[in-house]
Length: 51
Image (cartoon, rainbow, N blue to C red; front, side):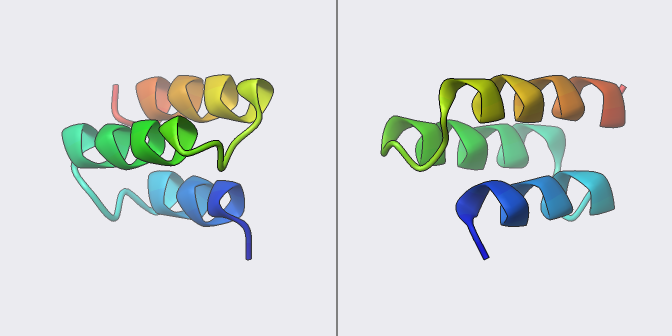
């Protein structure tokens, strides 16, 4: 399972708070675990899921 797939599942399940999942996604991105498009999709998903 990739970091992207795992992060997407966590966001959709609301496993973490918005702040915590955002930190996790940013950390994965910082260490080049996501492509730019995947990162943008996850950030948009966080905004819509936690709205």
